[in-house]
Length: 191
Ligand SMILES: [Zn+2]
Ligand SMILES: [Zn+2]
Image (tube, rainbow, N blue to C red; front, side, top):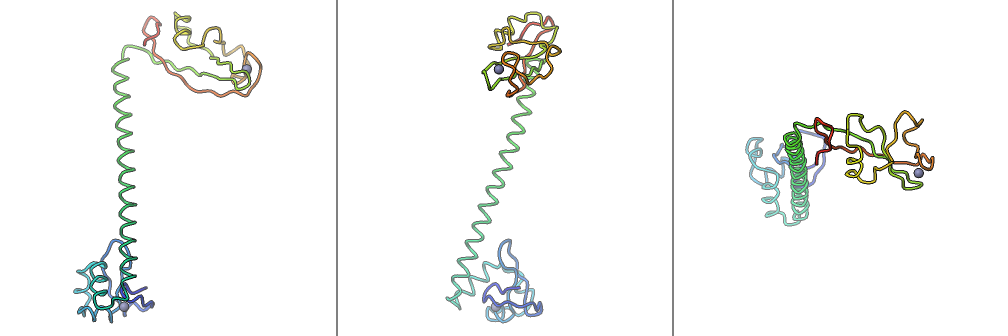
């Protein structure tokens, strides 16, 4: 262990008192403590390491550097903690926002059915295509128009071997993403 104030290092626990402090060294040697006017564990223990170091520097100006380093460590630790707390705050806010928007979406679309479709994009020819839009959607063409370039790019999933193979050029260099939309009980697309 290392003495907070003079920097003496020894393994002998009996030569040290423990000091309080969230950051930094946690021990002071008995000699230094005595110099500061503390002769037992209790009188030392009620002071923080920062206070002890400050008091020590008044007697030993050469220890100023140790004090500066200590303060710097403390500041660094504080700003780390602040960043952490900020991080938690943002995470929690993100969760709350998601719950809110989920609930809002549920309310808005509570009478409708949520549909999921996979949209494929061919990297070779740029074709965008879809598979197996549910049979119970009646106004196919309307949905196709609303969903963009759907048009005649809807394919029955059972007609192809690999869903990731572009039906237009045959390339398997495709990416895909899930898209969601709502339909009412009659199968009409809901905005
Ligand atoms: Zn010491
Ligand atoms: Zn293609």
